[in-house]
Amino acid sequence: MDQPATPNSFRTGPDEQGMFGIFGGRFVAETLMPLILDLERHWNEVKNDPDFKAELTNLSTHYAGRPSKLYFAEGLTKHLGGAKVYFKREDLNHTGSHKINNCLGQILLAKRMGKKRIIAETGAGQHGVAAATVAARFGFPCVVYMGATDVARQSPNVFRMKLLGAEVRPVTAGHGTLKDAMNEALRDWVTNVEDTYYLIGTAAGPHPYPELVRDFQSVIGIEARAQILEQEGRLPDTIIAAVGGGSNAIGLFHPFLDDKDVRIIGIEAGGRGLDGIEHCASMNAGAPGVLHGNRTYLLQNADGQILDGHSISAGLDYPGVGPEHSWLRDSGRVEYVPILDDEALEAFKLTTRVEGIIPALESAHAIAHAVKIVPAMDKDQIVIVNLSGRGDKDVHTVASMLGMEI
Image (tube, rainbow, N blue to C red):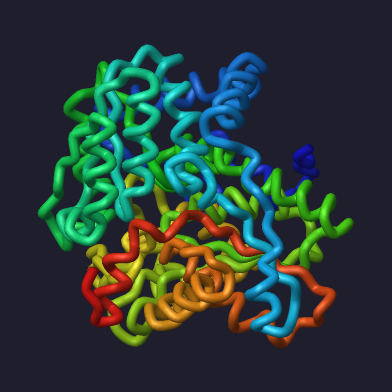
C-alpha cells in the first residue's frame, strides 16, 4: 500500500493554485482557463472515486499488464562489482514504456468529461503510441503532434501510431522537437476548446496536469516500494530515473520522498556537454521561467528566449522540466545530475550485452549513472533504476551513432 503524506511532507504539494513553492501554476490564455478549471473540477471528483479507481486498476492489470516486474539485474550487478542493481521493468508494459499508465488514466478522465477527440504531443514517440493506443481502445479520433526531427529519428513509432488510427502531424517550427510539438498541441486545444481533450504526456504543463500525471505514474513507485520490501525485506539505498519532462521519474520518486534514508537521483540529458547549449539539463544549467503554462527551470538565453538544446534521446530533448522536479531540486530532497550522450550510449550497449535487455536511450541515461556509482557502494546495498521503456525505437539512432546500417 502507498504511504499517506505526513505533515510537512515532500508529498503534500501542489497547493490550490497548482504551485510547488515558486514553481507550477497555470499561465495560459484566457480562452483555455475555463477548460483548465473544468479539468481540475473533474480531476478532483475522480481522484478519490472508487469506481474510477476500480476501472483504472482493471485496465492497468488486464490491458497494460501491471504490476510491472522488479528485476534483479544479476549480470550488471556482477559486472559492476558493487551494490545490487534492480530494474523496475516499465519496458514490459503494453506499448513498451511507462506512458500507458498515464494515458489510461487520462482517457478515462476524457470519457468522464464527455470529450469527443484526443490530441497529444510526443518526442520519442512512446507517449504518442500510448495515446493512440488508448484512443483506439475507446474509439476516439486522435491527432498526435510530433516534431519533424523526431518523426525522422523515430520512424517505427510513427508507423505504429498510424497503424493505430492516429493522425501524426509533423511540426517543422523551431528545431522540430518536443517543445515545438507541445506548442502546436496547445494551439490546437485553444482552437477546439469544446470537444477536444489534450492528453498531455509528461508531468509538466498548467495545473492540474503535473499533479494528475504524477498520480497516474506513481503506480511505479508504489509497486517498486512494495516489491523491494518483499524481495529484500527493506527499502533501497538509492533510486535513479531519467528526467526529461519527468513523468517516469516523479512516478518512481513520489512514494519514496518521505523515506529520508533513500537517496533519490534524477538524471538529465547532458548531451554533448554543459559548456555550450547542446544539452537539455535545465536544472543544472538553466534558470526559472515560464513555458507551456507553468513556471519551472528552463534553458533560456539572457533575454529569456527558450533554447532548443540537444540530446541523443528524443524523449529527453525538452528545454524544461516538470515543476515538481524544480521544487524538489531547490528543496534539496532530490539530486539532479547530467549524463552525456556518449555515456548513455555506452550504458545502452552494456545493458544489452550483460542483461539481454535493450533499454530505451532515456533509461540508458539512468543506467549510466548507476554504472558510475554502484562500483563504490557496498555489496549489501541496493539500487533501483527505473527502466522506463524498451529500446526498439532507438536501434536506428544507435546504429547511426555507431556508424552502422540496418
